[in-house]
Length: 251
Image (tube, rainbow, N blue to C red; front, top):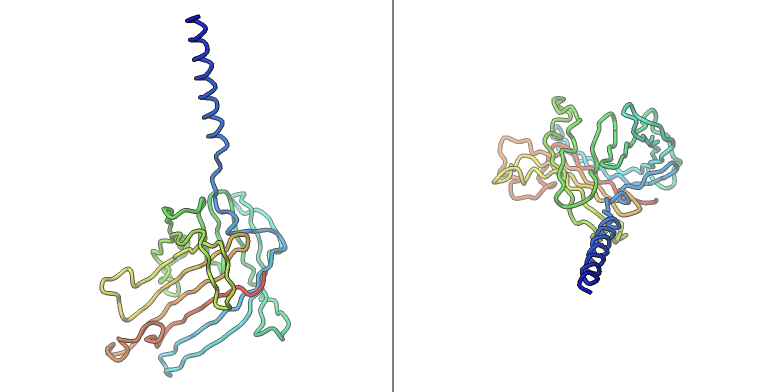
């Protein structure tokens, strides 16, 4: 009887271990790939609002256009990764026909651990997977920031914020499940903040949709004295540089 009892305990222990092991195997990590859906034929239309500040004649230029991005083909890059070619078209408003922006073809490279996007020969590491708030990365590390046109990109440490939170874009549409990829804010680099410049960048992605909103500021106040506009917030303080906002219209 004692041996039978010991045998029963042994069987029960084995079943318990197997059950725990089986549960561990069933556990799945949500990597967040759905925030950057990518496939041939996927199309998105964005409104792009640009504000350009000119110190030379104290003028502010405002431009609005629409950009259509369409994934037109897939191949592999030199590292054997899937590469998706993105064809761009442009128009000023809904009443105009689309005009191909040639030869500007961007592309995206995505694998299990990251996604990159090449825009105007600038390679950005847009995301790392899995998506979580502890992940940070140098998203502009492959950009040649020794070029003065791109030096403001240097040292940006990307991070995820507001994972799974809703986000309302400027046209009023709300996406219930989004992530914000925070790129940089120059105000956080200095204490007190540098009142002569403002560099800021974020992107917002919605689950099963992709990019829904982006904003980039590269602004400066060039003056012999900064007291005149010191109390004004950005971008009102700027008299040099630009600000670009990108908002999803159709998908």
